[in-house]
Length: 503
Image (cartoon, rainbow, N blue to C red; front, side, top):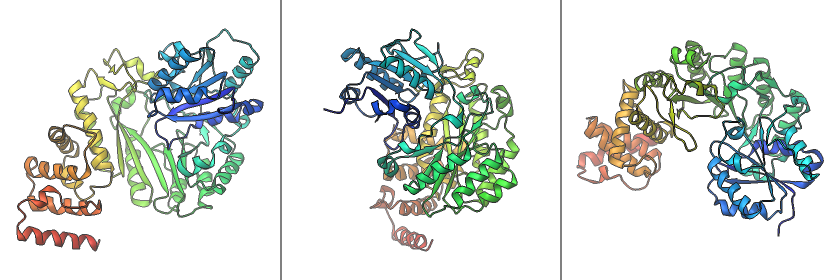
């Protein structure tokens, strides 16, 4: 039997490698209640009945659960089961998915209390009351923001297993000054920063414990350049071969002071997540997004050419007034900048997001089940939406994976969006799936499409595929190399391998 813990803080992460950063903040600020509290994390792949068993084994009086778009369905099942087995256990929900009353999911009907917004103060107050036998009448509680210099930092509560096996999230600031309507950060009033001295002390402690991969969750890391430079220089002074930093950056803000320090980082030590979303100025104006497109393009090009940073860029399909063709235009402009990755995001309905004001005018129709992905709009048919969904999946397999660096240019040529969509449509027709395609089978499908549909020269297709096939270290020959191979083709195959070995 597990040791009794009156308070359990829990959530279901999307993957084991993820950590619940928010739970550690709550725990860090529970003061004397820490001794009665335990953090327990699960993943959405685990069975709800097994999760319930583990939670109730601690004989809790209170269970607090963080609810997000990716785990709301599973948490609903967990809470429903707890209320059947142990209705006396008090359930407190928090997190973005339940923070926008009255626009809340059905799981809130099952809960005893729901805290919206920042929870460091409110969870402590509520748990104190409940453990003292008090039951506040108000179910929906607005979280109380605490000055960041008074918030106890959570970094001591990453354990050794987290450091060995999981992503370590950190933040130097909270909030966002921009009002992009598809994002919940549009609701923020301002940006506030943690005091750098205490932040650096915490980061140094993590480094001393062996953390080498830091994922900053700041929405606008490069907003205040002097602070960004200070943080980057802190890590430069402690640079090791395996240190890796991930930042989300404002795409059109890259002044010279920042460029100078970025060039000092070794290759493969930085990753920048760059939210482009769309290059269409009319859509940007409609959704209150302030973005200088020319500066954005120049900055991405500069980063690609002058730094060793990995550039992960984002586009969103399904925004109000966007069309299939117009989205393709944004994709083509981004492809021309040659980022390492283009994440093809499909618009999702976020509860509380200002974008929801456009639902009626632009006939935005969403999946009623999480993750509430857009299904159709006034300007985008369901069929077009499905085609782009498949495009996004195939793009991850081929464009973002890094496995097809020789073959991809042959696919994209002069019309990247049109040509890859054509490839995507044919892949779906031949494979019947956009999820489970073995890598060797993918090579064979690409050969068939590039030769039969695109009418490329057979020998040229074989040459570029052979280079990528060898890089992938796949065993055996693909089907197109096994059938009807002439002596000349066999000789050319050996030449391709020799050429690759010298690269």
